[in-house]
Figure 1 (cartoon, helix red, strand yellow):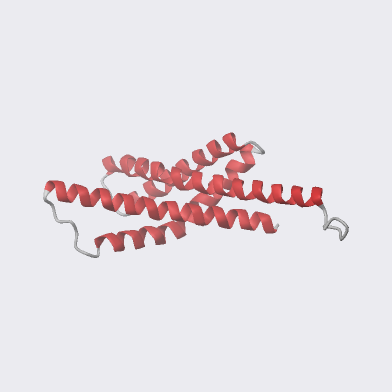
Figure 2 (cartoon, rainbow, N blue to C red):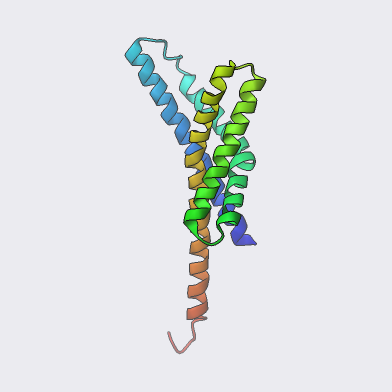
Length: 161
């Protein structure tokens, strides 16, 4: 039980860090575009505010998007990492596209843009989902390795020292 919680906490932290990194990369891309085209770069607080908003959205996306995707992917893929990661990515793409489309419709985004918004959200959901799944699997693998080594070496006896 403790290993399962640790695995998913480590995966959640990894996914959140990837979301924040995507926000930083997105802001730097927008800043470069603004500098090249001569547009307004948004002021001195544009970058930190964008990263803060993405960090908060990343926290909200952990239980709504990444954790269910990884859990369903692990259940469908069983013990093999490749299929589990593929299933998790597929679930994440579906959830992200659905959430983005629903939000776009609710906020009166023009109908022709809804598929674009859903597609971008789906693509942005893949790296954090992969980070979550791979980190959780790596922590579980490491814990099993440590337990196996502890079981084979046993307690150190006084004569062995």
